[in-house]
Length: 391
Ligand code: FAD
Ligand code: DHB
Image (tube, rainbow, N blue to C red; front, side):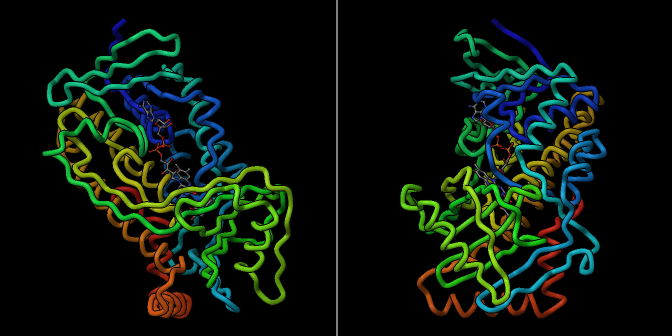
């Protein structure tokens, strides 16, 4: 059975759902295809920090009710190494904040808004294929939730299908260039039913490895521990997790409150960029085009920034016949992508420990510099809190 729409969006993560929302506001119809169920995508625990420009965009587009009521604006972060904890105040440094609001909540808000608008989202599909993107008649084939083979014809296809989806591979190898960096460590992510022991996030470098104290609400904390790549979660019973967190986050006069661990998993880390982010009538957005290690909290924000550029560009192309912004999309988006790729790599390599004693000294020197120099602190703050979209 064939269907037709203007924009076929592959993937109902934050990039795909926000794109369909922004396109609707521009008067452009879309259909979203997703392999997982709605329950699954809304329960996936991932990022937790929204840049100010992400918050502004969501609010301006009618997605801010719960975000403004429940999101927790933060002025900055703490940077720590043994015996020292320093607060960087982004408001003082650059006049911008970040907001703690889980990706699960962003996903639910987007899902609800799409439902209210009667947006067609086909969950539970399989065998997605992206075809004929070099022609004026691209289409997507898939098996629907009832097992029927289907075809979705469109004016353009947007790959918002994350790091494992098929869209990026639909760009012929001769037309694409990729860069990749793998890291010898991963993150053990932990969700715990305990009030945060800190007002703002703590990024801690420790000889045993990096630790991050984040949060989700007044009574839910989120933690991450550096572990070797390929770590089996079975090697980390809850007691070992609390012990490692207490050691790595330790500071005289400060105590870590512990509680029931409700979720834990190991997250691999890598940097990846594929360019261009457009090939013919196929556009890529979010993790489909680029992956950053999570240390700078950039992945979700970068996905939002991509679609904030792409929606008006597609409206220009499809509604007004003006192709200039669509033609510029890849170059414009990639400027931010590479800035965030560098920042995420820098935060990662400054805070994660390895075997090399020379590297360790350089890391400590960088941390002291950022904590001690207003100019250096401003650089971190500007990147962490995020540039306005379009820059
Ligand atoms: P995704 O959210 O990955 O959405 C892509 C969607 O496409 C998914 O729903 C997927 O099911 C769907 N899809 C895949 N294949 C197909 C197909 N063949 N057909 C149809 N649909 C398909 N960032 C941070 O900043 N901090 C963090 O702590 C953090 N933790 C993370 C933990 C994990 C396990 C992962 C995977 C990512 C994490 N990230 C984190 C990154 C951040 O969550 C992503 O950058 C963000 O989700 C990107 O949004 P997206 O919409 O581009 O991709
Ligand atoms: C969270 C994740 C990050 O990658 C980060 O840098 C800060 C916070 C979080 O999930 O809360």
